Image (cartoon, rainbow, N blue to C red):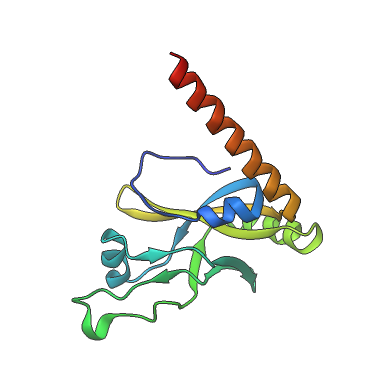
Length: 154
């Protein structure tokens, strides 16, 4: 399980929580270059269409768009390159077993600073059907209506 620290959240993938049921979350370090970290400090990252996959026993994040650093000139990397995620081998093997057998997928949920290091929260997710999404929206609307009526009453 991911242990949440009081780090500064850089970006969140809100679409992932809309499209998937998140069963478990894991904390993973992310292998970055200097200009990418500087760009993250400016908040220039997008997790919207990103996903994680396991290749040769290593975990990678694809589709994480980190915009090039403005003052980085020749040291900037490709914004959409695959980023290697750092986790214990045991955790990666466990995730590989779940993803390959039970229809789970790995989705980056958030990116945050833990001290001076950048961490990614990876979710072990199952896909939602359209009716599940509609139920969630209806539940949120009902809750909003209840809160609004209580606020007006008191």
